[in-house]
Length: 132
Image (cartoon, rainbow, N blue to C red; front, side, top):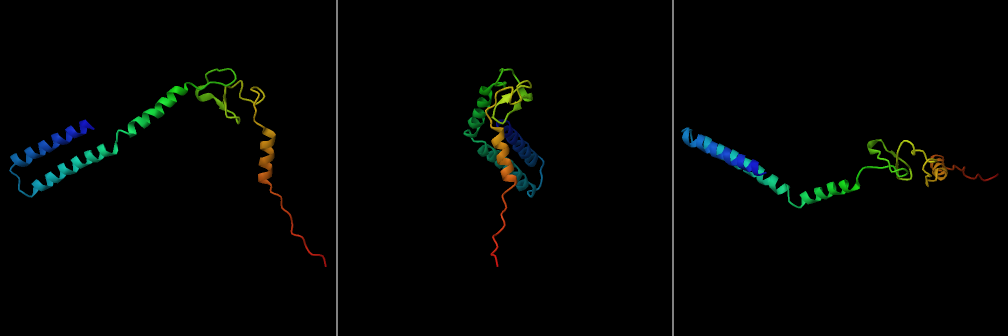
């Protein structure tokens, strides 16, 4: 941000020197001043957008991720990194322990399957007809 402000100052100084030393007409002077004012307002608006309160919030997120450490298998504590397998119980496992029978998974697959079937196939009952 400071670097951009210095560039704006240098640009305004060079524009002023060109305008004053070049002997240009008075019509170009307001245009040059408008360009300098527009550049200065851009720098100021960017400075307002980047408030100091935003910066610590971003740093907190990075610190939280750094505290998590490497992802590890919940059964053998082996580092898995990106190759870890997510189980339905919510844990991450290595290739050896990825199956539910290998890590004694507490997730109830039968109830999940029953619920899925019940949602996919709703019970349809016909309306009763009055007998004649």
